Image (cartoon, rainbow, N blue to C red; front, side, top):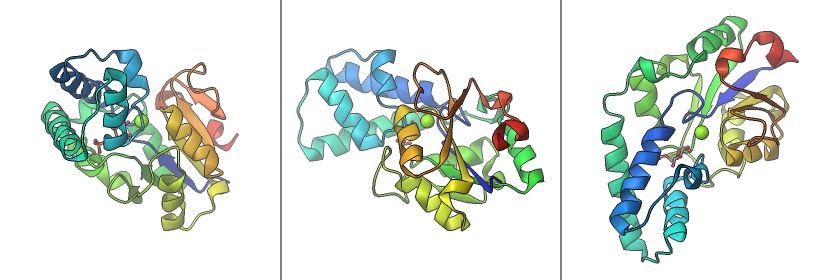
Length: 213
Ligand code: G6P
Ligand code: MG
């Protein structure tokens, strides 16, 4: 039986991907190059500094570490400003319902996100109380596709990886879950997330039956 479900945050529980994209694009434009939505796919699930490095590579820009720290800080300030008005309306379809089903069934709920803004966001959308465990960008030393973020969650909940199901929208996150030895359900399309064990369009398609299968 499944003992725990581990959820990525951005793009799984809440629709923050568009705000990350706007903030990164603003940074790219200030540096003098364009940043498309297609480029943005590569940043999903990737930590803030790794994302900046990918962005700079796309723009063909080389900078020292001090400058990079400064740019990452700017990007985060814009992002935080963009999400400042965020509330329950930004929760993706089916999320609250599915989390409630899991709670009733006694399945543990954990967060496995690369974001350092995760707790603040869960508070804003009023879902923090649903989580038994939160592993986010402030707890991890290795970014997805490293399995660390998911293994720390299983460990904290005292469950075996084989008893966990991960929900992920990013290719790097699907890889991280596979490396952790967990069953992974992709949120998105089969084309992008072909390595996932199962793919749904959103959590609205999830049932306890589908989880156990
Ligand atoms: C998630 C998102 C990424 C984001 C990363 C770090 O994985 O999918 O787009 O860059 O978290 O988020 P943060 O809020 O710490 O900058
Ligand atoms: Mg994500």
